[in-house]
Image (cartoon, rainbow, N blue to C red; front, side, top):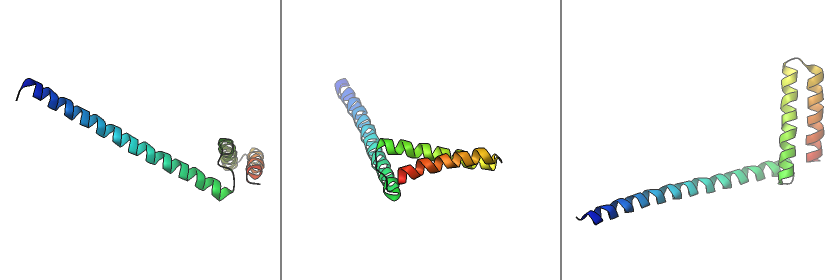
Length: 97
């Protein structure tokens, strides 16, 4: 085998390895995108809201308010907890209703 044949073989193996990595990443990210979009559409369908970016941002803000309200109640901050929960109720109620 000549020296050119060895470099051709090495180049072929490196190219096949790179192609394998690219195919693997493409498969992983295409499935990740499908899974994420299915999750978002499942959440929005169950809540009866639109699947827009604005609705998702408002949903996250409402869930943060809900979390902070529960956390404040667990720390025995009843007034703060009730205020956070009331804010969560307003935001999530507006979003769903």
